Amino acid sequence: MKRITTIITISAAAALSACSQIDTGNVGVEATLGQVKNDVMHPGVYFTMFKRVTEVCAKELPLSINDLKPQTSDKITLSDMDVDLYVQIDASKAPSIMTKWPGDLTEAVEDGCARVGMNFVTRQAREAIYASAAKFGSATIHTERSAIASDVVKALQSDLDASAGKGLFFVRSANVRNLVTDPALEANIKAAAQAQFKLQEEKNRLEVAKVEADRKRAEAQGEADAIRIKAEAVAKQGGAEYVQLKAIEKWDGKLPTTQAGGVTPFLNVK
Image (cartoon, rainbow, N blue to C red; front, side, top):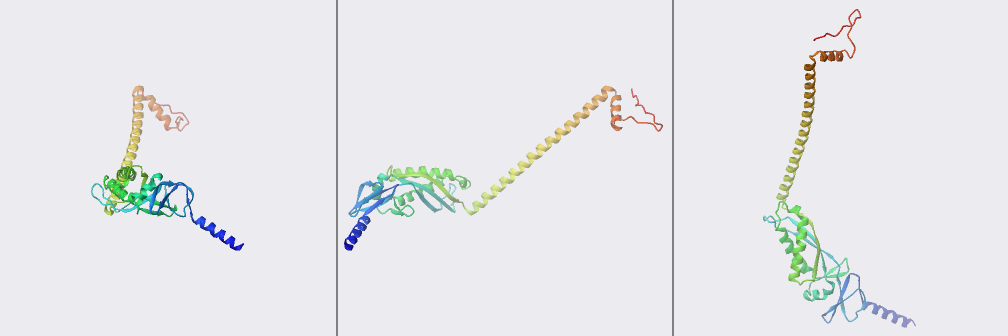
């Protein structure tokens, strides 16, 4: 009985080891005696004791292109440039890609599947990035990351369609993760930015001074108008009413008195 149990256990283990599981988002590519089959294996569990099955990543994958030193349009070499690409294959064409680039097979450790054709894509991507950087001047390229990324996606997709065949690879997006210009140029850019800041600061100061000057002019104009109105009133009344008004203001509205207690009348200057 114990022997039978052992045989069953061994048989079950052998059967399990002869099975292959294809996870969601991947496809299986079967090869028998070195011949790759055109039909892909969809997610599921398969008995593959006499077959070699490669589980291929069919989802969108990141592809990092690092330590590039492209030249700008004015022939300045960048110190460093890193770009992340997001590329996907047509899952149904995974066998064709493996056949076309048989040695281009790398394992995506984090996904537990194999990347196919990505070395080829990387080579083409480097050329597209260098070509894109050459379209921008060294003084402004650090502000053009989005434009560079968009240009790389468009150029790389066009190149892959032409050189590999349309519909094999899809460049979904790109991100210029790092861009460092020439150290001397970096210093010039910072100096220019500081100069621009100081210029703006001076403009702001002049604007404040202008507003303050306008306020003072308005106050002066108001005082001048008040004096003019008073002068016109004096001229109109012959001066008498104005003198009486100033006297009242001086004595705080009270009439002046003599030492004997009598009231000193206002003079009539008419």
